[in-house]
Length: 233
Length: 38
Image 1 (tube, helix red, strand yellow):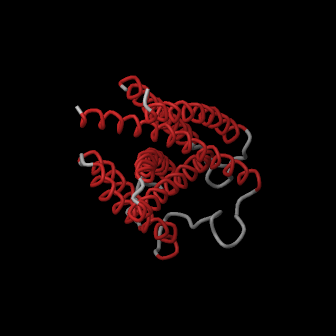
Image 2 (cartoon, helix red, strand yellow):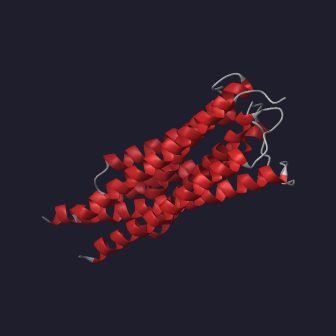
Image 3 (spheres, rainbow over the protein chains, first blue to last red):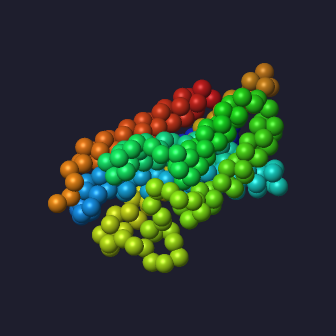
C-alpha cells in the first residue's frame, strides 16, 4: 500500500469515528432542544427550529469561508493540500446549506405566513449556496488537477467575499429575517437556557463538520491516487 | 398560550436528520468504495 493510500485510509477511519460521535451528540441535542428547553411564548414550538437552522447556517458559512481562505492560500502557496481541503469543505458546506435552506422555510411558514420571501438576506444566502454548487460542478468538469484547483480557488474567494455581506445584510436592507441575536456587538438577547442549547448545538455541528470534512479529505486522497494510477497506465 | 405549530418543528427535525445522516452515510460509502478500489 502506498503512503497516499495509507493516509486516505487513516483520514476516512478517523473522520468516520468523529462523524459517528457527532451524530450521537446531535441526537443528544434533539433531546435537549425538544425536552429540556422552554417553548418560546410568542412563536410556540416552531421556534425550536432555531436550534438546527442557526447552527446549520453558521456551519455552512464557516465551511464557505474556509473554502475561500484555502483557495486564496492555494493561489499564493500552490499547495495541493489546501485545494483538497477547500473541495472537502465546499461539499460539506453545501450539505449544511441544504439543511439551512430547508429548515428556514419550514420555520418561516408558521411565523411569517409564507415559505419564502425574496428579501436581501434570503436571496443572497440562496445565491451563495448556488455559487458553491457551481464550485462543485466546476471541479467535476475539469480534469487537469492544477487547472481545477486554480479555477475553483477563484470561485471560492468570490464566495468568501459574500459571507460578511450576508451577515450584515439585515442591517443594510429592510428584511423579514431577524437581526442577529448572538453574533452582534452587544450581549446575546436570549434567555440562558436557550443560549445554552444553541451553543451546544453549534459545537455539535462544528464537530460534525470536522468529521465529514476529514472523511471527504480522505476520499479526495483516494481519488487522486486512482487518477494518478490511471494517468500512469 | 403559545400557538400550536409543533408539526412544523417535527418536520424540520426529521428533515435535518434525514439530510445529515443520509449525507454522512453516502459519503462514508463513497470513501470506503474508493479505498477498496486502491
